[in-house]
Image (cartoon, rainbow, N blue to C red; front, side, top):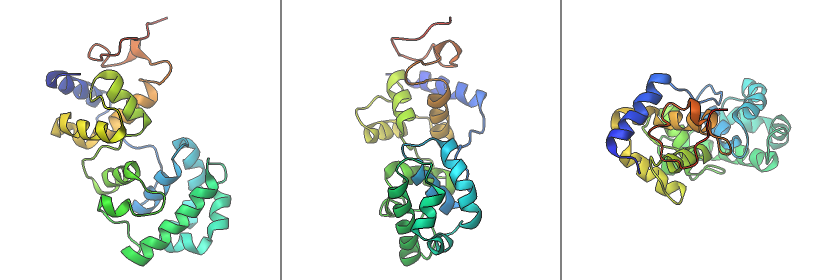
Length: 213
């Protein structure tokens, strides 16, 4: 497991390479972000953005989404995996937002998790990106990077999340979620990690590092 000075260096290098990391899901407000994250399960951000661009142009609030109806929403997102279930969840969560929260996305993560299709990861993403809370949403990329590098190993996403929150220096915590996702998405790849170009390769504890061709 990486030691505190190594963790400080780890994030200092990621910060130097990308001082203001941004999420790649396109959205215009907390509601469209919530819907986009729900749709992104088992799908790529690029694929979600392609579908939600036209959808959000006409439905960027819960009421507008309900007015479209499930069949129309399903037609807009049919290129996304599990689109039938996701369309049902989008309509159901929109209804619940209106009935319980006055049409607004609640800032409280526990409240968000009561919405259809919204789990811990989704709630953390929205809390971070929409409301500026320093949280860590552990997806497959973050889970891999945390375990592979020795940054915050854990057997499940909750264990990794809690360990990351304890171990990441507070001055890096706000952007840490995006740094780790982007690092896992573009450098620390699942099958063929790009170790020769990795900015933290000398800090990483991965035993099977790839070598330059």
